[in-house]
Length: 176
Image (cartoon, rainbow, N blue to C red):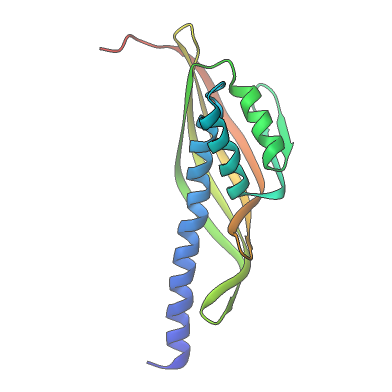
């Protein structure tokens, strides 16, 4: 194989790994968000906050649009407080993430590693929020993320928008 073909295969492999790492940020976000909804559970809160620090840059801009009320935050700690406040009245939540698409805007390679870059990702959301009165609030939406490669940390989200598509309230049945 020629040197350029080997390099191309190496870069494609690195981009494939980067795509997985970027997609995993959103999956971790779903788990962290559900953990922050467990108000009063210190271990769950610590997991949620520390995970937000792992996936968001310190200056990340985060917002929710198109829903009953707009939410905004700046940085992992600010957004963790917003999420905790938004979920505090629910018994439980479950954030399901799917149909993730990553597009690389710019990636730098050096010595067989990614050393910098930016990408955008969209991910579908189905979120279930259970109220104490046996009603459930179902939210459908799309996350739009901008991510960058941060030396020593890997890929992190620096701009996130959740755009609500629809919100529905349903009565839950009894578990059998």
